[in-house]
Length: 156
Image (cartoon, rainbow, N blue to C red; front, top):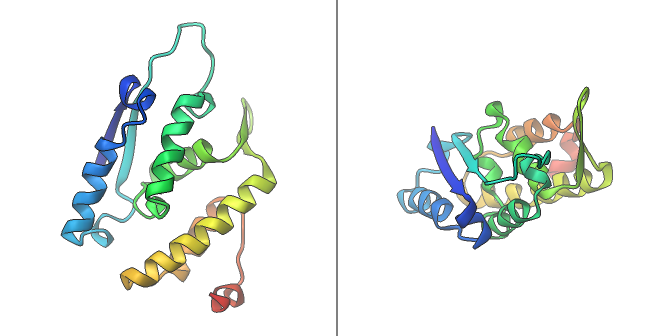
């Protein structure tokens, strides 16, 4: 398991260096497939004691993750889905609301755009890396409640 630790200063200065150090090292080693679903983030962002917001609701935190996604749009391949990292990462990029009973509720249209964008990005990236992608992409979309037909992937 790999962990990228973030703090208030890194986030407020949009400093991606901790993530770049980990991801770029994996790229140089050619070790991406051996680290599939192994990446977690540890975010320590200072908030006032009376600030009830979750991390994905803080604009500065979201902006840091938006910048990260712009550089590594295929990063969901590395995220630890079982530990909830894909869900949290998505919450940083997709408008949503938290419900005490139902948990996170994404804006449906925004989530659909995000999922389709990730299918295109990850599909192309995995093909370039020589990684079989259809079953992985289907598993990712199922995490968000989407069933993508095999015929769609044949179009890609």
